[in-house]
Amino acid sequence: MNVDKTSGKTTKRRNALGRGLGALLEDTPSREQKEDIVREVSHINEIPLDQVEVNPYQPRTDFDRQALEELADSIKVQGIIQPITVRKIGHDRYQLISGERRVQASKIAGLERIPAYVRLANDQQMLEMALIENIQRENLNAIEIALSYQRLISECDLKQEELGDRVGKNRSTVNNYLRLLRLPPDIQAALRDGRITMGHARAIINVDNVEQQLHIFEKIISEELSVRKVEALVRDLSAPRKKENASQPATNPEVTYQFKQLQSRLSSHFGTKVQIKNSGKEKGEIKIPFVSSEDLDRILELLAL
Image (cartoon, rainbow, N blue to C red; front, side, top):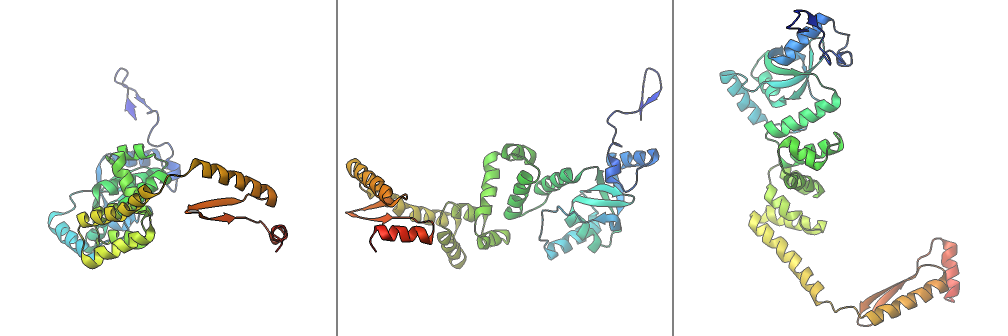
């Protein structure tokens, strides 16, 4: 409720927080319940841990047990410094938006209540908040960050420029993370587990061939290669290809025209699109496609076979 300073009368606030709450709460809230919710949203609240449900949109998938124990020890001494963020989904029921490590460590520490920011959000808003707040505040590994970026783009319908603005990163940084998801699963897992660094992965991604990527990855693990050595290895792999391309003789326009003419005549003769590949040094191949066994029989008859 707002107070009109000129008349002293109370007026209903337009676009009040109560709009749409019926979709978020099990029962339609009364005015008193709405006022309670507004107070909760506006302040840090102490809420019971057993009323906090796990966030189904949690981007983090792995939690180090030792790190949780250390955080629990810190909480016993210092308490919770950074409140968690939750949304209210019913009477005495909350769903976690961010802060799962703090929740788990608080349970280990034996806490019964935890400080929290209470927010109102639909599922898509909740997903976006969860992903962005975890990216910004939690120590996610590179693959978890990349997956979070991908989910923000695909599930929250954000463009890379918008995503960069939301997470405080430029477009090239976002793109570098997204490129990691093109790597083979073995390399992604190694990056996730800390067996290789982001620098190693960024060097490997510049190699197009998957088998070569895995070969480089195995050398990194077996020989404990530095990022600079991997970058040099990638340059060496690409150098012969460039040299080979440079050494190839220029195509003779007259020969090209002759092959095109021959290709056209053969296509007309066989009634299908014939392709001629010139490998150089008077070598090459002729490709005659067919679409069925009957079509193959027809071509064989034309070849008198």
